[in-house]
Structure formats: C-alpha cells, structure tokens
Image (cartoon, rainbow, N blue to C red; front, side, top):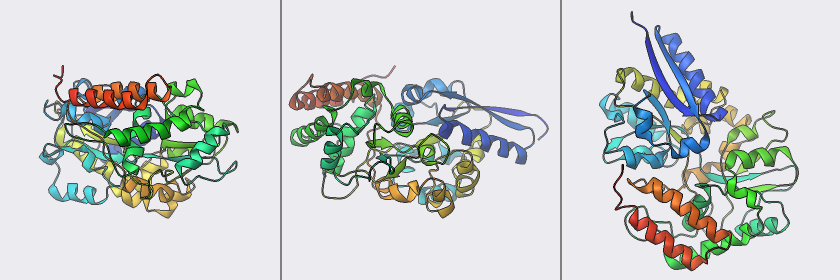
Length: 381
C-alpha cells in the first residue's frame, strides 16, 4: 500500500474499552504498512447515551451498545457487515458468541456490529469478607446489615427490573404492548424495594465503575448483587482488593437466567472511505485468535466464547468467566426498536422513583407500560 490510511475510531474510556482496541490497532498496523487507527474515547455515560448516527458522521469505527441498533438500522449510518464480510466468517463468530451477544447486533436482516466484549448483570463480592449469596432473600439480609452497594444510576436501575422479571419466568416485552404484566411488575418492584430501602441516596448517581471502585477499596461493603461484569476488578493489582464475580443471585426457581445483557460491539460507519479495511480489522478483533491473546492481555474483556473457555484467561480473573458463564449464556436481550433509547431513560426514572418510595409499585408499572407503548410511536429526530 503506497498511500497512508488513517482510520478514526471511537470507544469508551474505561481501560476495558480503550486499552484493547488501541493494542489491536497497533498490531494491525504492523501487518498493514501505511495503515493506522486512532482511537478517541468517551465516558461510560456517554457510551450509553450518545446517538450512534452522530458518531458515524465523524468516525470510521465505533464501539457501540446493542440497544442503539434499532435507532440506526434504517438510517443508513452503519455498514452492514455482510456487505464485505464472508458468510463463513460471520457464521464462525456467531458460533463463538457468548449467549445472545452476536444476535444482539442483528436487526432487520443485517449484522450491524460484531461482539468484542461480553457482559451482563452478575454478582460481585468480596470473598475475603463474606461468601457469595445464592438467593435474593440473602441479598435482602445483606442489605439490612449495611453490606450491599448497588449501581442505581440510569440505565442500571431499569436493568435490575429487567433481570428479576426474566429470572422469575416473566421477561419484559421487546415488542409493542405492555412492558411488564402488573403482577410480575409488582412482585419485582417489591423485591427491589426491599433492598433499596437500605441503600444510600448516593447510589442513584453511581454506575458499575463507581460501585466496583468503592467495593474494591474499602471493607464497608461486601456485595453488589446485580452489576455488569468488569473483569479488571478481579485482576491482581488493579485495585486494593480483588473482587470475585459469580452467577447472579436468583429470585425465581430456574437458576441464574434472565440477566439483562450488556457488552459492546464494533461497528463501521457507512461513510468510511475504507470499508474493506475496517471490516478486516473488526473481524480480526472479534476473532478467537485476537480475543484470547492480545485482547485480554491489554485489559480487554472478551466477547468470544473460546476466550471465555480458556483456563489461562480465567486464571488472571479469579475464574470470572467460568463463574459467570451460565448467567451470560442465559441472559435476556432487551428491546432495540427505534424509540427505545428514550424509553430507557424514562423507564429508569420511573423505577428509581418506585425504589425511593415516590411511586407505589402499581403506579410505577402503569407508567412503565404507558411510556413503553408510546416509545413505538415516537418519530426520531
């Protein structure tokens, strides 16, 4: 290649989001003389809320959150992977997916991103202070003792509702209609309130990173019952104390299933001048070769199942991948329709008000269902 090519990428600012793609870009440049990828980063809150079409206007490559897919699928701002990736390559990544991670970026007949990071709500605890809990009743008792810390900032407060509803066997809707049936909504909100009434108001401003920072730095808290996996906190030397990640505590009788899926995927702007090159990079970053090697060595949390099954990868994280595998494989895929992202904000406020006692559970369920239905009728701007 005679002319130099500079691709621009946008990811999120946590070491888990930034370090591995920068390392991958450096390795890719070594095998592709004249090609460089420059990565910018945004905060976790920005990652969860910034419209993808805004990013696609400025970047070739983007690390995105799957609930955004519905708002961009029909706008032509992302490049469908099947245009430049082979069917076999995509099938291989689909087969290597953790749970529904690959599926989460497939909508309206197109693959809009490739999973490079898998996460869902799991249990985080300080094994040096107390053992993990099994059931939601144990979480309530821990909260009564003042040992529970919990990320209740939007959208995580809403994710708790999603997770417990699916765990009792009545998952929230992903298509037009009521989000949740009244009986399930009341049951789940009452269970969430039983824990939340012992929570500090500051938790409503905390995301998983803030919670895990606190859990790993002091001995006041022993447990975060539902928090997205951040494998870095299990690594030796990352913080003062190492955190153990294990399957979620259960409310229902079906085991640790139904957790609200998270994770990230790599997407390509339809405006890029180098679609083939971007596709080649994305396929490689998502591959088992990269994910179980360079990616995890550079602080990455892989999305590839072969990396999750690797004993060497697990050894660095107190077996975080082995110990949360069932929760990840049975995670619930939240709505992705155009209009969902605004509902996610509104729904988070409603659930937060219910947990704080500003709304009764029945009132909250009514409002959630009203706003969810309305989210299908909004015109996007």
